[in-house]
Every structure is written in C-alpha cells, then in structure tokens.
Image (cartoon, rainbow, N blue to C red):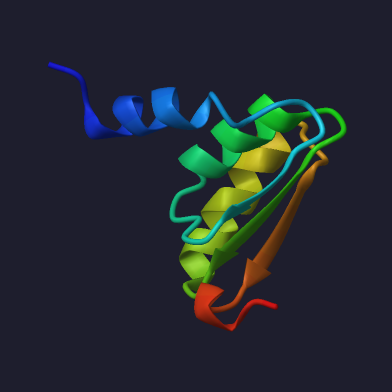
Length: 82
C-alpha cells in the first residue's frame, strides 16, 4: 500500500523542474519543503509558509542542515500571501 505522501509526491513530480517557483503553504516540520527545494534546485525557489513558530524553526533547521539556499520561509498565514 502506498502512503498518501508518496502518492502526492509522485503526482507533483510531473510539474516540478529545476528553476520552478513553488509554494509550500503549510511548511509544518519542513519535510515537504525540503523535498520541493531539492526538486527545483539550484535555480528554483520554494516559498514556505506556516503560522506556528515551532514549524518555522524546524523547517529552517532542516533546510539549513541540507545546505539549501533556495527556500524563503515566512511565519505567516498562507491565506494572506500576495
């Protein structure tokens, strides 16, 4: 049985390419943010949003540990992004 996350990732891969601009509207612990950043790097950008400070901290730590520079992290409600 395939996990839901694996299914979604397999569907999204069709649309992701180096240089793409993508949004992770609910960064959470940063797992999907990291996955997205790896798929669109080096010239792509991921905009990651979450309203929880702990989620932002965990996402930032995960991205820093992976030494990725193509993620912009915002502690904000994704419903308010422009």
